[in-house]
Length: 64
Image (cartoon, rainbow, N blue to C red; front, side, top):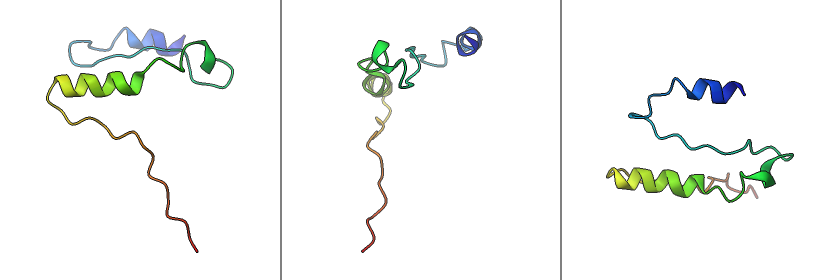
C-alpha cells in the first residue's frame, strides 16, 4: 500500500512506528481492534521520560 511504501523512508532511530490494519469499518475487526496502539504509544513516551497522552476525547459542554 501507499502508506507502507512511505514507511520505508521513516527514520526509525528518531520515530517509533506502530503498524496495524486500517481502522475502517470493513477491516477494523481484522487487527486494528486490540492492537493497543494507544497503550503502546504511552508506554514508549513514558520510557523516554515524556508525559503520556490523555486519549479521552474532550466533549463539548451540553447547552441547556
